[in-house]
Length: 216
Image (tube, rainbow, N blue to C red; front, side, top):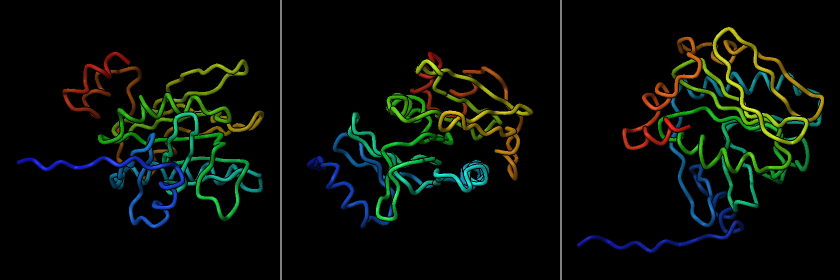
């Protein structure tokens, strides 16, 4: 006979209390807690390259860059996420391990997170009032997508590949230009291919998810 397990829903406060004692990172979505899988070496190198570029740029400013272990809280969606890289410029102190006002968020795609990063997290991140840039980095090609807030408040999607320069926005008037190849330094990731939806489905999804992503 199959075992029946009771699903328990936590409050945000209960999640934060339990997360501070947890030995693994867990994300919180509307009462449910999900354990995060570990990242491979390539994932860590790409995230680290971005983090270093951001930290150098933000030195001696009110903004700080964080990598992997700093949460983002989105009250409207009742969730906490651990972005691969996040930048915050306000509401920070040594006693807080999350921000509600990120200005920049980046996720490195992997087989276990690609659909979530491009669907659920995309929707919730773009509803953060303070956010200026959401960056998605591919692992198997030098290919980066940016969702950036325009001067009129809407969102603009751009795609960058090998040999191009990406322009990252933070607070109004603050922008960092980075070569795509710098973000993939010390990896064997091949050149990017622009606008190949089939590539995304083949590299990051199972056959059951393929049809969903081809409609992106």
